Image 1 (cartoon, rainbow, N blue to C red):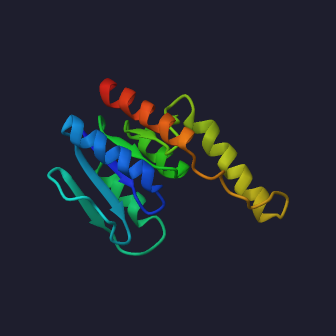
Image 2 (cartoon, rainbow, N blue to C red):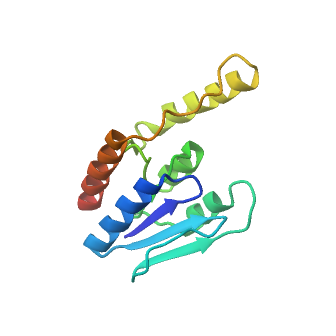
Length: 148
């Protein structure tokens, strides 16, 4: 099993929790981004820097992850592509993307994107990342690692 992080927009607390979990369970961790990330030194943790461009990190993760891996991402289209390939995905707030939920989440995301484009919905974005979100993520991550 490999843990992957779609690292370009990943909150730092999520990265820290994931690094600790990977070290504790001795699981390989790969951070994928289009810019260098500050990584704590240590075995089993590596970074892949992809070319700048829309979805370059997403494409890399889809091409290199395998069923049984776990990917941390807030990117719903990426999560949909992963779930279609049998790869488990979780968002930074601890919500697990699976075959039962990804279709609805992708449809809502696309609808909101269309409404924002038409000026019918605000562009406020997600709520600020909180300690409650960090705890929910840490708990869900631990459960998924144990299951996988």
